[in-house]
Image (cartoon, rainbow, N blue to C red; front, side):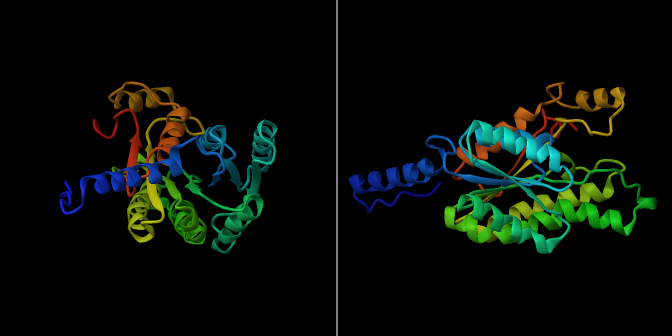
Length: 276
């Protein structure tokens, strides 16, 4: 507890406290996200698209990053612009090309004049048995899950600092405990968890940096055996899988309602990381 300064007159102390609470909070939460701008990597599909729709519904303008999913990105852009004209752009870039990352920020600023929220969502995910890991797999998994979030945060920092913005990193519960057969992916996400805390320290007080660690929300596109799904769900305390909207709610919490939260990683996993 911070001791109260009794040398300040009560009336003045109350005024300063009110200013501290309401000025900071209203900047973020009053009226949703109208006028704010979010850049979301890997936003064409799955959780990225869900967050794009969720933030857009709250009034934000959206930069939809894609790499190979151009068709899905453009369809989402059309959908969002049909709801609110000129509120979304689709931006193609290979996140492994570090030199292109600054261009994403520049394009968003050119479209909307500012940047308030960066969501590092794009991620490569596939098994890497230790005996078979190749240098290209290492570069891909570390590149998309750790290197790109760092250098994109670096490129976005001036714009975010100007708006007292937010960086939100999509981590993973397996940053805490490695997923068997996924040594490189788990290591990359563990690095992203530490990067989240490190950037919170380095970029504060102007920029908040937080993370979300999903549990069983969406199953891999490549498919998964039903018995394995059941085994994973059985390890959650809630005994059920989540849904994309659970991640959207968490993202909106950080974006709208958490002006005094930074350096934190919220597990949205049905309690799996408690009952592992």
